[in-house]
Length: 141
Image (cartoon, rainbow, N blue to C red; front, side):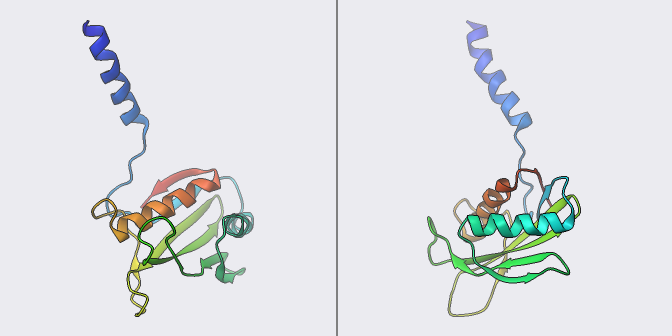
């Protein structure tokens, strides 16, 4: 009987050890890979366009791309957000900003903090989902 009770507990603890947790107040997602800065810059553009993002600004000299502000589609539909990407050698750096009111130009940094479902945390979680599309090792700062 003890084995039956201990097995689910062991499985749960094992899962927690291997699942990566996002540190509180993280604002940067880094996707590590084996590509050059130029290849990462091109990969960012291709991935964004394939996932219905519009590119507002792109700088081929510095390998940066900024998405056009858009509204969240599933939750918090009144919240706008955009992402900034930098293609570097062997990594992609991703940050984001969000705006609760479309009447002003007061953009806040997307952080992993706050209550579940809050605009700041939800924007970061969506940014994290996008980062996972790049097939690399994801880390947070």
